[in-house]
Length: 296
Image (cartoon, rainbow, N blue to C red; front, side, top):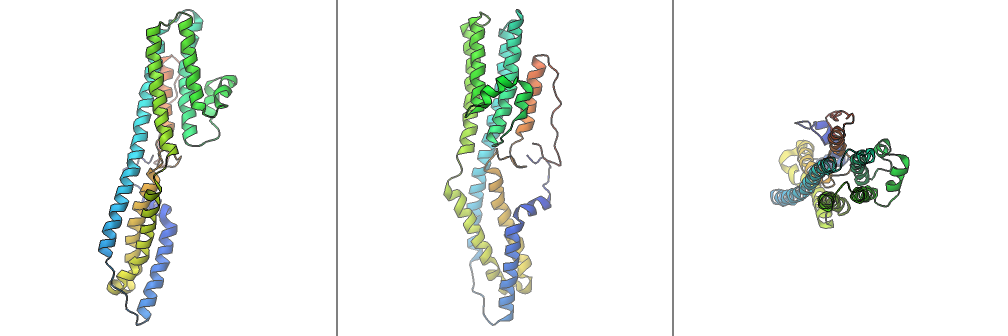
């Protein structure tokens, strides 16, 4: 997530430079043709075209931002549920015998491993070294070998809570309370998977892109009679605005895309790790800080 108050103009141009460069050459070609021949440029209702296109792009960008914000809300629920789960384990499970204390610590470390596995899963990353730093290789491989590794960690945590009940360290009411938190975590994960696996409908993806490019092609034809040799500058600047609006939707539509525009899941996982390790008395790492204006 970009955390700078004002985005750098260079980063915007980098994302749209290819279609913008093609548009500039098209503008120059159209301007040279009309200014060196007697052919008269047709009158085009660019104002009407631009207004309709702005509505298309605005509606698409709003839909993309809603997906991005929903992803952030789900991660907020995940952070709170992780704290509640470990708080319940610490409060309900006794410190004696030592096996009970180890079980509490195991639940906390598994939850940290779970959120990191979920982060890697959503970003389609093949490796997730944080999981192996937290758990034994056998325990990590058991969950990471599943088709849905994050769900494997949840199942393992539920088994440990059941083990605590069988040992008499939890009663059924306490187990139910902790199981309810696991259900909230699973629901949040399901919402994230829904956002990741369900793209915007094809109409939202195809038509704004098609109409934006068509409008950029028509721009110099409609402006050349007014701007003359300045048409490439005016048309390219106007095209930049529409191409940037189109790119905004592309950047926000997938909040888990592992780009500077997605959610700062690394930082949120680190927040969970700090809170849970401090809760069980382990040494906690420092919070993540932005790198070149981007918080990952």
